[in-house]
Every structure is written in C-alpha cells, then in structure tokens.
Length: 344
View 1 (tube, rainbow, N blue to C red):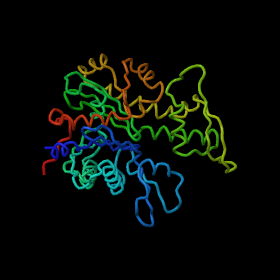
View 2: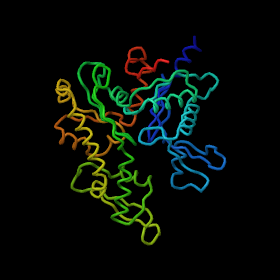
View 3: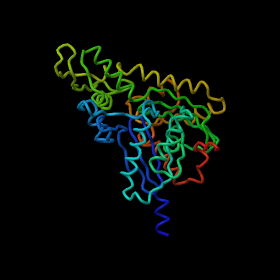
C-alpha cells in the first residue's frame, strides 16, 4: 500500500509564469519557486544554469552564454527551452526519477490559444508527466486566494503577474468574463528603466529596476516623508558607472502609464459584467493577487476608482500554484474547473 500511496503523492501543479515558475507537490505543498530563466551555452547548446543561478547571470554573461526567458507575456516563446526548464525543475523536485510519472496541472493565462495550450501540454509530457491538465490562471488564483468559485455568487479576481494581468469574473465554477492584457510587473520595470534613462541619462539593468520597484514603488503617495533610494547604473554621457538618488515620487511617475493600463483593464471588465453579477461584486469586492498586488497603494487606488472593496490575497505570489494544487488534492470535486481535454 505504501507504494501506491506514495505514487499518488507525487502529482504536481505548476505555475509556469513569465517571471517565476512555482511547483507544488501533492501532500507536500510548494517545493520550488525560481525565476523562469535558463542560461544556455550557445557553442555547446548545453544548459549552464536554471532558475535562481541563471537569473544572477542576466546582464552579466560572457559572449557564449545567453540567459533566455522561455516565456514572454505569459506565453511560451521558446518551446524547446521551456521544456528543458520544466524538466529540470521537475527532476529537481523528484529525486527518485525511476518512479515518477505524475499527473500534472499547469496554469496558463486565460487568453491562451489552443496552439499555446498544446505547447504547454507537450512540455509537460516531455518532462515526464503521465497526464497533463490545464487550468486558467485567474481560476487557479481565485481558488488559491480562497474565493468561493463554485457558488452562484460572482467573484472578481485580478491577477497581476510578470508578463500579464488577468482580470476575471467567476461564478459557478467557470469564468464569466475574462480580460487578459500583456502588461504586468516586467512592464513596470521597463517603465522605470525608460524614465531613468530619459530624466537622468542613466542606463539601468533589469534587475536593478525590479529592485527599485520592490523597494520604493507605489501607485499612490504613501506618507509625507517619502523614501529615496540609491541607484547605480551607467552614465550615458560619460559612459562610466554612476550612482544617484531617486525618490518614491519619481518612481511613481515612471510607472504611472502601465499602472493606469492595469486599472483600465479592470474597469473594462466591470463594464462588461452582467448586471446580476455586478450586484454581487459590489458586495464581495475584488481580490488582488499576483506579484503586482504587492505594489504599495494599488489597493487604495483601485478602491478610489471603482468604489468597491479591494482585498489583497494572503499570499499573492503563490495564489495561482496553491489553487492548482488544491485541484490536485480535491481532484474529484474541482475537476470541472480544468480545461477539458480536446477529444482525439
């Protein structure tokens, strides 16, 4: 009996995100959360590093090593590298290779085409899964952040990831309306890079921009005494490394445009909401999840714009994988929320 129980225990759920890939193993919870980056040696086609190690290499690699992000805007852009990355993460999680043929649930953005979904399934099967199921990210995020997805009352979830923002209204175990825009945390980083380049003639790297966003980024003024931060980059005039101070207010100006796009997407979804459900939402409010939910003041700003209660998920970075994981643990009850297999 021990064998078969163990066999059941190895099913996995994967949030294959643009920024991070998170893996959940049945009965064990989240076992891996690493950046979706692969460092490849272009001469030998060998993988040099994956995940955290590979992210450290971004912007610092010698000519023959390239850091690849196999997903952009929530979509697999480099299938072969994505497969290798997924296989690497799964093998890292499962030490005993010879037994593993797990069931796998993979979360994908709601706007994903059939072709893109097939690519994800292929990657899963090549990585050694016995069955691959797909769940839409907003549905997984809603389940993972504790929304009552199976009830007739409507719930709204806004999942702001690295590459996409998904807005969905969910009722009776299905998505009623969904909007997916290809703007997320990466867009905020890029906006900071662009601003600093334009205003200060300073060239920032991706990782530095992300650090600034996390440290002092905000969607609304926070308090009278706003923090400043020292930033380092390359001076475009002299070409030499340079350090300067940037204020929270400047960072807010820098990211205003993408933040507004995210708010517009949420308003669009509300505009298209059936009136019965709109009534539910006024009462239940909006659940914010994904890494972007951590942006200071975003909840307050949304509350001001929509006049609705806004909640931030308890664990916004992991809502999606926790929701997909819950589908593994309660497969029979939640099977209905998975995207049905195309009949062959």
